[in-house]
Image (cartoon, rainbow, N blue to C red; front, side, top):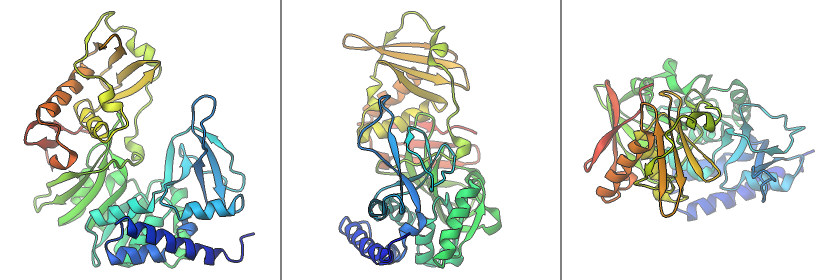
Length: 398
């Protein structure tokens, strides 16, 4: 049974969260601040997983289920913290009445941390009077904020997972919000409600879906996250032109989103099978793989640039050896640490690490430019990331 004072507790915690976000400069727009003050986030997250303090014996993250019934105080405090709440793993919907602890797994749905939700709507320059398509309804919390700010009639939200959308719809309608909702793949947008002034994606894509450009009014904007199989990420805000092309700069920060399910990385089997036929001896690497794996902002940015150079590559580490595998071309590479250097062995039609090295060298020669200095151009015959001092990087054709 829920405590009698739950709504009072929720209001108090929501006020505290709003004040904290405002103090951090997140809520500069009074309209978005009012929305955060009004939308009851706890109604959209009846259950979620939080990470335990320590990993298990295999090094996997231990995810603890949290509900109002199991731990009321922790549940409500987390709902009104600036934290992403994981609500689903591996596409399997949990039974929150009997939810069990999880070890590892790939998150496939969540309630994104409130500061990032507001930042996305603000970065997309969403204003009163705009019609908006949101890709990735998730729990519905972000959708509710948009409805509060714009009015439900101007908000369309789509979700690929029908059970997720059903849960979100129930919460939205119970709170009095009535946006247009549909089970649909974000790769194709939502033609019945097009055209839109703004499209905002809460998932990531390997390349900009052409349907989104076609469904955006000339002068309209698309905010989405680009990602890929190396798990490099970059956010871009595109403005659509009269001729259907689009252009926009990358945005700063280290934001990552779950991949659109149709763009998720394929499984590739045992790395040892891929590297069995590589040459026995290799060459000295020009760049260490740590340049794209380190826990730094620059490495986060470089991993995305490396991914543009080798868009079909995947990376895994076994022991001290870094493996690169390309399931499209059958190419592979390994990087093994030695005394003062890394040794590279490569095989297949694509020299994966050599491609990445060329980008890293060009980046250094251009004086290590930040994300905001790169522009993405999207047109009929391709999509290219450009910088005035670096060669153009094509996004993959899908």
